Length: 203
Image 1 (tube, one colour):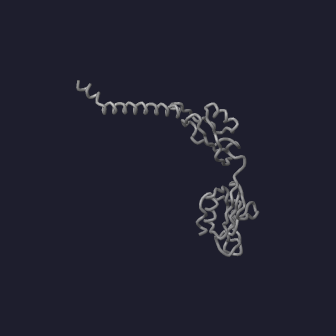
Image 2 (cartoon, rainbow, N blue to C red):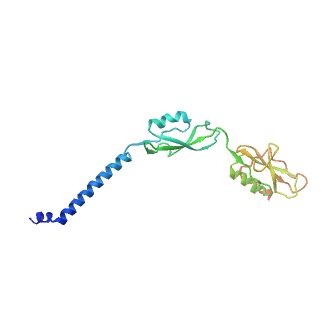
């Protein structure tokens, strides 16, 4: 009797109705979100590494995915125009209709602007070129008043002007002053490729 009387209370009725409406709304919203986000319908990013875009397109289409090229780099070991990397990575679970971003291997080597190394020390000039990414850097000792001072660059015996553009595998020689008007050390341009710090004996 007391429960029936309690339920007949107008305030209790309104509260129960409000709770019921709230629960219905929550259920409806969750159901809509499940459909909208395609809950449980994830697909894997296909393994398209090494494929050219024309061949990779079929793999994306079969999984209802889109793709977009956002970056390129040059690698001698990869096929020109082939895919090097995907974002998200290969094998990652994504929703259908997602755009996969691609990094591809360019058809030509990237050209890098050569910096001005004049009046830098041998160590500084070498570090600058290596930090940019030049792979084949050598030192060529030439006559000059100040020992260990870089006075310019050459490539295969041809002077290189600052601001010129070369691929990262272009051989570069740092012209380093010997400290005298004569060469006092052997020319190492053709025999030594520096892969680390310059020889400490020059300091």
